[in-house]
Image (cartoon, rainbow over all chains, first blue to last red; front, top):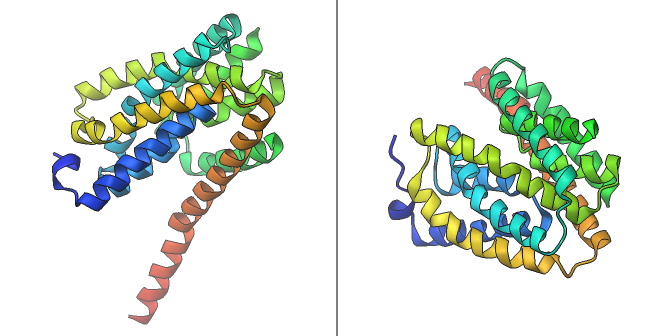
Length: 126
Length: 133
């Protein structure tokens, strides 16, 4: 399916999507994550992308954001290299496992658990 | 040592299933492993890159990328990300941690409500409307 986000949107929607992109950038740069969770609804509602395509496009949009922000954090001396690389190896291994498990685990129950963990962790961090 | 790999793996699994693992890795590192907030954020940002590169290559082959959406959203997002990463440098760790906590709780709550509505309310309402039609 061809999606023409750029050409066919009304001007106001287009501006809202661009502003939303700014919010995604702020979440990524300032808070170090969570941009993707904002970006997927922006792409499905704003750009009218199908969910699968929105997820795929979101990952690719976040990539340069996290590389640039990560480089700025590292240049400011905030990246602990050793534990950083250990964690990254875990993320890569887990990411592959998660992609393979995607359709084998009842993801609906898991998402409820995950959202509740997010709320509890957020309240604890405040 | 193994704890860091495990923390990464847990959030990697969630991320690989498309549920935003990054939002999980930061609180795991700060709340359970006493990593400072900014270090946790830097770890999350940098850990995301290798996986995102692999996923992007796969998705290009599957033709799942929307180039027009990419071109529309990326410029403002990149500028905002760079500016706010620079700004974060001057914000105290404790403040950043609290802001992140609020962001996480609000995000979790809104996702929970959204999921609940699409799972139960929509089904219930459509069942009700079928009864009356």
